[in-house]
Length: 214
Figure 1 (tube, rainbow, N blue to C red):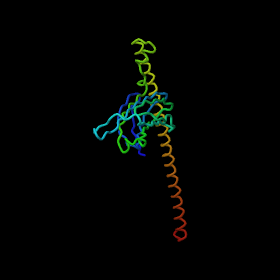
Figure 2 (cartoon, rainbow, N blue to C red):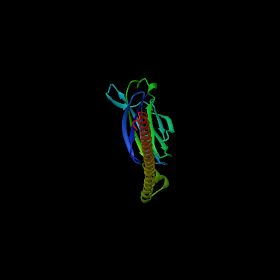
Figure 3 (cartoon, rainbow, N blue to C red):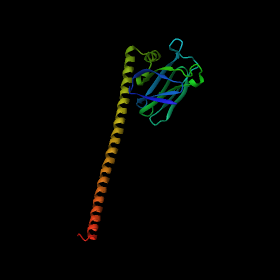
Figure 4 (tube, rainbow, N blue to C red):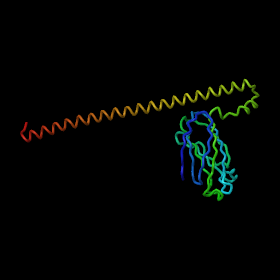
């Protein structure tokens, strides 16, 4: 089974793309996400049609399996969807989340040996909110809705800042650990050289004494 990875670096944004997969291929994407952040993914599939020489909407029987892992490689979502689908999850650990998709093409004689195009749209943070629906549900005025949007944006910015501080702290700890190891390695090398020098001096002295040169 083939897998490929793509790093999506847009935090709290909308990222839309499409890709092609074979019948046994898996595509994985890495999204950097702050903690306690909602993510919504939407996809639709198109099947290559040899007669028309173009991609056509996939048949309902063709499904996609979606698997999502957190930065600790813990599976937080693993589910089978249809040819078009929508999945959601909330991050509880800041860092790189792995989003993988693959088809159930081995069950589809129509797709066997063919090619599938998948259109993927990932929304992160406040972009997951349906504000027209929120306004209708809570009966908000235009001004109240705008204030709600600004508050959500400020909250997401705070989460992103916390995530950046988390990343900086991890980088600092890694740098300090590396520097400490380099220091101890240098000290060890110096001690080895000193011990080797002392041993060589004693060995040479014993050699010259044996030869009665000293």
